[in-house]
Amino acid sequence: MARSASRVADRDLRRFLADSTPVLAGGRAILLQIADPVVGAGVRRHSDFARRPQQRLAHTLMFVYAVVIGTDEDAATAAGFVHRAHRPVAGADDLDRQLWVAATLYDSARLAHELFGSPVSEARAADVLRAYAPIGTALRVPAAQWPGSVEAFDAFWERSLAGLEVTDDARGVVRDLLHPRFAPLWVRAAMPLVRIVTVGMLPAAVREQYGFPWGAGEERRFRRAVRGVRAVRSVVPGWVLRLPGPLLLRAMRRAALDRPAVR
Image (cartoon, rainbow, N blue to C red; front, side, top):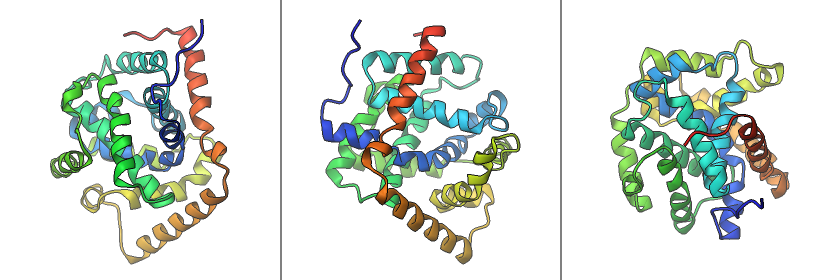
């Protein structure tokens, strides 16, 4: 049976959404998510960042690509995997928490493009916000709860940041995420860059709650890292930047054949 078309009809927008630059903000999104105490507790008790940090990131990216640029079948499959994973997690289906998780993915993607690519216009930011709305509904958040404009999103974001509380659960996850003891050598070799970029992208108040040291020296290293990543990204062909999405979707479709999604 032929697979249906992508959920995003606009070709230029679809290419923008498929760009893998937001991968650079994946750690930031996770740290913001677990700064919600309920999310942090659930992740700490039911996740395995210590042994498989790269797999956890891949699963998150797989979900985002499936819902944002994949087909309706892809989105349903990804949502099924997520709902299955959430079943044993207390509070995982709380709508406010799921909305926050979805919001961190949009905000982190927007910031990644701003830092490492090109400024995101107001019109493009609005298009991406609408394209990310299905992430919320895939997490069972009513469509009406997703902010209807960038201004509404920014207001929601500021209110949500003010209510975050970094707990020992979150700090434990961060130790496993940013200092993976059992990860492959190539992952551990990349961690100094990952750490400075991840911590540098956090809102200052959240960074302070985590207890990350941050002064003039750390700020200089962060800015150097951003310039370096921008320089590398500027010479990488666009098709290479868009390659992770199709590869992850293909992997998800193979996995679904062995373990069908539960809706």
